[in-house]
Image (spheres, rainbow, N blue to C red):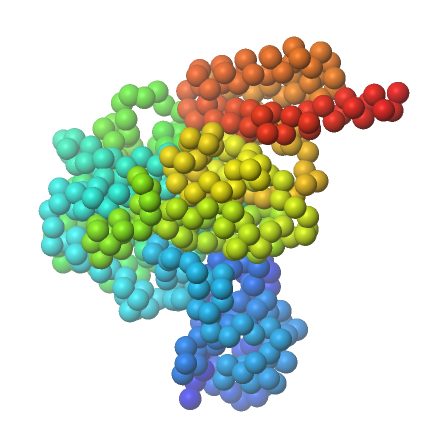
Length: 519
């Protein structure tokens, strides 16, 4: 009788030795003349346990990790194919506290299925959403998405249903669906994890959007730094076409829709939707003036739905289970769940999907386990390189778009980067401005010039050169960036700078104090 062993093919697991582990398991099984089937699944997001090897037993899947190739022989000796105990054992996968406490909707199949198997995808609820959508007209599909409360998970949190209705109501001979998979924020990896672990979910979500608004063509704009996701998406697209879920007759509906993957060249600015559209058209990635909105005049001047990976991937369960089911998760105007990513100086880094309302402290302490260094957490940055730096006093803020905005921050794509008490927050503020200067598309003066001058001002401030005047000038520059920039890159860069000044002012005078002590 064959035993099924799951070894992740996710990029994080591969970077930690998963390929060698898979080969070692196959070789050891062959040496012992045991019938073992190795399935390359995605990651469940518990990166601190990767490579996480799972054994399918009569009582469910049993986990071992982190496993290295050198551990494989001892695992076989201990009887791990039957789920027996070992120093690397964690018991039933679902009983691991990090995973057990999560509320997985969007990422429910990640780490569970073979991402290259259409049959496995369907056996775990895949394409139920599309089949439900095929029984509805476009306006009804849009209304279901609207009623679910789903908002864009890329950072802006704009209501998805409103965007889709605008495209639906705009008359045009051609409409497009564009997925923003140019995941460039520091500390973020949920898009990659889903594309590598459950790519058909993204394809299904985009197909439902196409049915809703009347689009016939879709594009996934993928960052070139994601080769594993690129391969997974192309394999999934081929499988979907082969089964009739893409092409000229989607699932026998008589309606056409197909998707193509396009690679970006690594520009952070192309995460902004209009720069992305310019790049897709073969132009330099620069921000467009708005209006017109992409929903009215987007790709090739046609009405275009632009959403990110997690937004599209959240749609299938909304259609399959209903708007009320999805809306029942969350709080306030933040409905459903958000895959949060824990990175930086964190003991248990990885992905945590929970309903909105969980506090930042719960994520950092209960899931993350505090810092990897063992030192106190001094600051966290939520929302990527343009997010605010928050001190411990703000850790009880609930995961909620409005709560984060009221606290002077932003939730963004859900990335959380952790720093311990050795961090220099003035240096982090400088980094934010330097990042903006490097990544600016150059179209507007406040972002292009203001960020460069801001780096110079922080350098003078930290050197003790007329600090009061330099701080006033820095705040004035931030005001200009906030209100004068063409897009969010320049407009949000002041958030990390001003939050560092507000919550960690002592770091901006440390260099001056050190200089005085030296003299």
